[in-house]
Amino acid sequence: AWCGGAPFPMPLLVENGFLPDLDAVPAPVSKAAKMMFLNYPNNPTGAVAEVDFFAEAVKFAQDNEILIVHDCAYSEVCYDGYETHSILEVDGAKDVAIEMHSFSKTFNMTGWRVAWACGGAAFVEALSKAKSNVDSGTFMAIQRAAVAALAGYDDFIVGLRAEYQKRRDALVDGLNSLGWNIEPPKAAFYVWVPIPKNYLTADQFARDLLAECGVLVTSGAVYGSYGEGFVRFALTIKGEDKLAQISEAIQSIGDNLEISW
Image 1 (cartoon, one colour):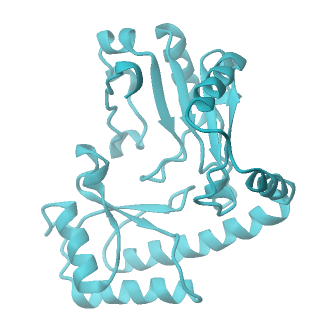
Image 2: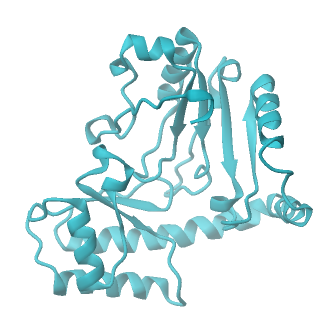
Image 3: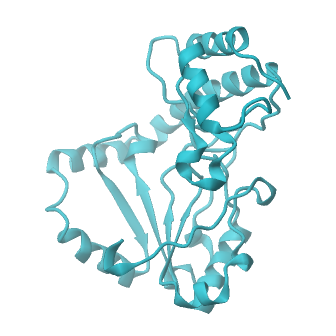
């Protein structure tokens, strides 16, 4: 951590819709804290935050003099007509928050390392100073490509959302046919899946999916202790017929794994 900072994890639990319970943060922690990171739509859970939660977070930050850094990289990948929200929709948010967005998710530009930040002017200026001491900036050709991507946003985003929604529906419907009871995520391109009851750990289930079914997932345990009991399926897959690949994966899971609930 920079400047000797120490993290305080905030659990994201099913019963809270995978939103942090700000009232559960101990007073000594909230008073000592300088910065709070939020990420909605969320990786890995696919959870979304509504404006009322962001208003609560802004009030929390105001009361405790905390800067909120909101990672909003998945905001444009949303489904079924759902529209995600920015923390900057809340009155007073610019006094306590800065929001980050990445071209990697919206425009499939993973690895291009181009993004932007928006929020209070003092926070953006501080970020610029810090960034200028980390590297010398993004290659100009990539910046020009990002400009072109933004100019074509309206035409591009409709197809992107439709493609990921088809994959999401195929995966969720397939898993539910095997006994899961998963609600389709409203945004992001992940499906957060509880492990079957006959598995003790997420690592064990992830290993069997790979070894027995040829299906690669991420064990929830890599995200911390509160991720135990889940695995993350990603909708970012290669190949010509992606829906067929999802169907084959579901078939392989059903044929090769013993699953009990």
